[in-house]
Amino acid sequence: MEYIKEHIWQILIGLNYVLATSAVVTVLFKKINPTKTLSYIIVLLVFPFVGLIVYYLFGQEYRKSKIFNRKHVLNQSVVKQIQKELELDIKTIESVDELLDEKSKLIRLLYNSEKSKLTVKNEVKLIKNGDKKMQLLLEDLNNAKHHIHIEYFIIKDDTIGTKFLDVLCHKAKEGIKVKIVIDDVGSDISSKMKRKLKDSGVELRKFMPVLFSKFTGKMNYRDHRKIAIIDGKIGYVGGINISDNYVNSNDTRYWRDTHIRIVGEAVRQLQILFFTTWDFTNEENVKISKDYFPENDCKDDVALQIAASGPDTDWSNIMESIFVAITNAEKYIHITTPYFIPNDEIVTALQVAARSNIEVKLIVPKKSDSWIAEYATNSYLEKLLEAGVEVYQYTKGFVHAKTMVIDDVFSTVGTANMDYRSFNINFEVNALIYDRPFAKELNQIFSSDLEHTSQLKLDVWKKRAKSTKLIEALARLAAPLL
Image 1 (cartoon, rainbow, N blue to C red):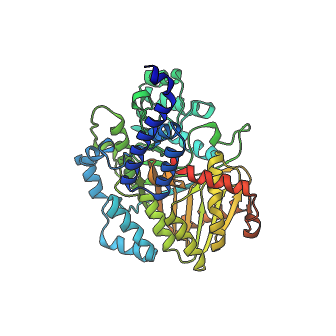
Image 2 (image 1 turned 120 degrees about the horizontal axis):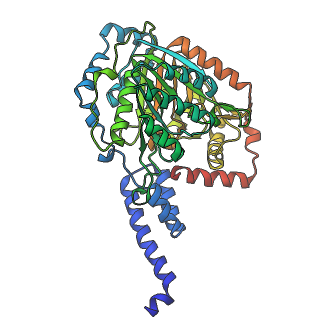
Image 3 (image 1 turned 90 degrees about the horizontal axis):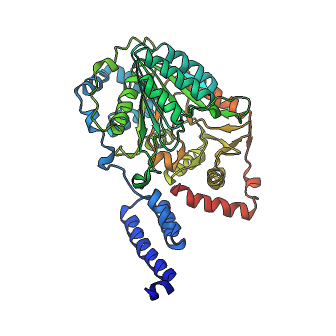
């Protein structure tokens, strides 16, 4: 015992490196992204104890494991019937192929990867900023007749959040079935409000609660989706959470964001996606009835696919769809993202597009809500500028929109950022929209956002201080871990 007391630090350091070496071997055998592999190795070997804590919290790999099994929902007869009903006839597929030309590869990619059906009977409304979104959403919630399904990364019971939750309580008391899934890390609802929800009949579930013995790895795999479904007929998806920060109240920083409201067949895909999450958060298997999938009477013809990705999918569906869209662009690529920390494939695709005389424009925040994300994003911009990509920094406030529009025909709006976490770790959902009028409208918003940006010039950007470049390099190295 005396020897142990005198050499306690040497023993602990030795034990640390035994465990760290074991972790390094585990990381190497996983064959994950080289950048992330190197980041873990450096943290584990250079920072005693801290490295093990980081790996313990963020390094566990659950992709494709049984913890995220969706088969119970997808195998139910009701869901199988709905999927069958969404199958398109050959004539419709040919008409969409003619519209999209080479971009029809996207449709086949998502179907082959995730059985994500293309739907055509949809009405899609583009929503700019949270105040307008909440106005529309609250109106739809108040008009609900059968059920309300909510799945959000962030719900807070601040001013707008309380108004939102009060509506849900009121509807539940009316007899409307109300189900809510919140991410346990992103959301913050008081115990008092939770009691009110329960007493009103609202069913609330937490996605992967982070509690002591269950803490391992669950900081990584978060439900970053923002989905609202009303009566199985109306669906919302996009970047806007439920909090005062998102509605541009007088005492908050200007928040520029984008969401969409869908009426039509695509809502069925959102409904199935919600039930897979709801089933995961429940101890008992969920039984799904046809009542949640009412007949669609939408007269508009907007072609749309729902792309979902996360540790429960075999492929990185959203990343792959973005990659294919970029590589098939012929005229222009316009991207808005709050966090630009992409993988090598996306960087190369953008560089090749720009060098092929395709107009590539990227809007990112000048001042982010995360300093490490800001520096990590900036570390990628010089190589893009060298390839001819036009990079613009948004200066009016914080741009949180996650959108892309290509060649006046393809658009995507959703929850996925252009970063490693959204591509590989979090549960995300994007709407892929194949429609010229919608693409034109989204591109008009992109052009108006450009009026509140400053364009980066390569010669000036290169003159950043060496200390700034060092911080950027360190942030880029750490980004895959966070």
